[in-house]
Length: 276
Image (cartoon, rainbow, N blue to C red; front, side, top):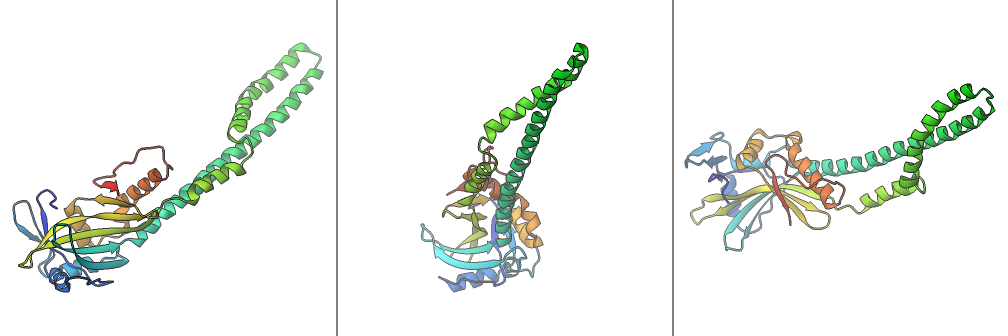
């Protein structure tokens, strides 16, 4: 697959976990080539002449596991695939989902406590209003009643809200939130994928790059990103912070899949995603 008519010529990696199923020679041959690409003008661009694909791809601080494998695609082409697993990002998304659950419970609890205080204040003011009946002077009686009645009008809003939103108290509402998050479809593994197709003369043509998120229900959220942005991240050996747009995107998809967000699923920055 081409990206703006630009093709990755070669790329390598250091061995964390290397799967050499299929043609072992294709993997080794690809890994030993320089880390370079061909631009739109058909020019070979190299980051460093001595920097191989193996060195670039296998020595990344973001990768907690690296796998290489070969397979034959539907068009009978031999494909070399590189996969880097981002366990750190997977944990980050799931932590944010859990934080979101806790935050919703905290907001709900504080709202309930405020309404309880309003109900206590309403009861107190109603008692004070009854006491004003003992005032014999009509003018003083009206002056005493007015501020109490004004406050009671506002507190009636709280009373209606309490009856509507907490008819059986706080616990059932907290249970609703916990039940909604109990069987959530969540990320199991976030990986970066690169694929090259091979030719008889051992030329490797870049065919795909992107991110694949395996969800707990067996579906995947696959995202593509600009090739050269991706290669720069590999060359610079960027850490997890630089992948924040990806983390936010997967979080947003997780929220959307589980009905935890009222907003439509969006694509952040240049990430283009779909669920399969």
